[in-house]
Length: 96
Image (cartoon, rainbow, N blue to C red; front, side):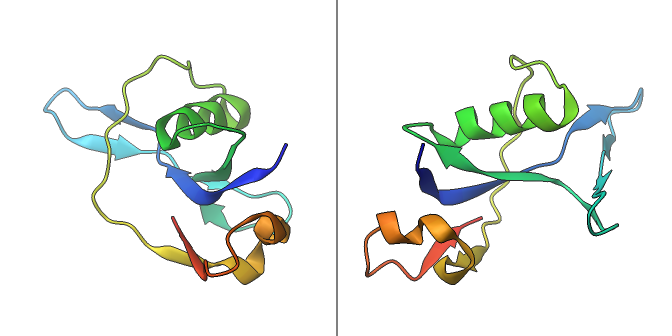
């Protein structure tokens, strides 16, 4: 299934008794780095659907948990993705 030209980052969180948010980060086995859950959209997935799927696949989070969208968006060069051959040749970066 071809990857869509966007990347999602998922920061699972919970609210404390006083309303603060505590975020979970995960340690990669292959690199030892700490990071959020990440992945690309598959097929015709929306960004929300991709975020829910990644959270379920990588951390076992229930698919129906609420999402808190962040307004900050970065970009990643398409050179880092083998599926770039399936994307518009004018596309240089994908949103993250």
